[in-house]
Image (cartoon, rainbow, N blue to C red; front, side, top):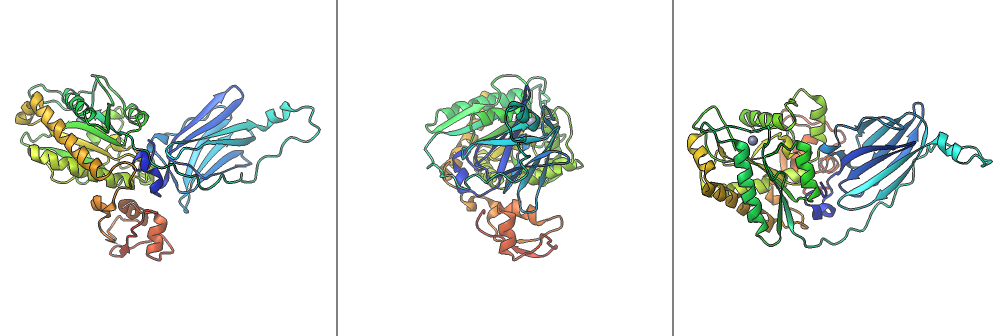
Length: 448
Ligand SMILES: [Zn+2]
């Protein structure tokens, strides 16, 4: 999705650039690589030989979740690899079938740039000018010149706030089932439709549904829908279930890059994720996923998500009981939009017979939708798109000091407080990334 925090707020935050997608397009003898990025990249493009590789180095960049898995090799590309380098840059490596002379074209857009890299086979370049007396062009072994480092940012234009409302489950995935036969997928759709209607009635707000009927939409489809609408907020609507029939109340979740707040949140996330990704469990044991989670650099959007979640909780609390009075964090796949605040609302417990009855009633569905809408309104009133989110809004950025706990690394602390590794290092005069338990770190105020 475009933008770092809000689509229009991208220029004000210095959070890492996200690689939104990587595509390899092979058309006849021509192969090109298409990268979409959340901002305007500076980059170096060069080739290495033996074996033939094309390398793109992008400073202060990270892979977005939709960039994975990498596309399979095709055309002149054998495979794609990536590495994060100690200086915070991302290196993309394209292993080539043959030597190429890459050329690049950047369609710069502060919100969504497109970098197109044509991989011109040297063999064909030579063929193309048989009359040329000179030798074939040498491999482009030297780094290509950097494009201009700064692009003037346009002034933010007032525009409608876009909210993607995601009705959980659908189609072959019914979600949780109530004892009285109520299906979560039907409740989530009913509440989501009401919410969209309420939001669209507000001037300056526009809402879209990720599904408008009883169909299954996978994770990528839900994200695509939000992305194509340039959503400023992603809100996923669910209803909870527990073995304990007395469990009740609303819970609001935001993504955790590290792990769940507690065991219950972890299990819930595992359950919700399993349906979305087709039953494939991406457990803690998956090192690729773990590293990707660490690299998402969702610090800015997690802070904002917590602020949205708090605002929604406040209104849901006025409506009925809260299962948890604070925003919970868990690794929900559906919240993994890299750059848009995203929350998941478990409206009530469908497994609680009394709450199942309420969830079934149009009146309560409407009341839930109104409470959620009021929270969204409060949030955007305090944090209009185009303005940077005040750090004070986010509980996690309130502290100016952090005492290192077991399991912390310098980078997890940086992510947690929404600051860059470099500024955290600088603020504490650190020359390495080693921290020890009990050490107090000064958290710099800036996000650079
Ligand atoms: Zn659900």
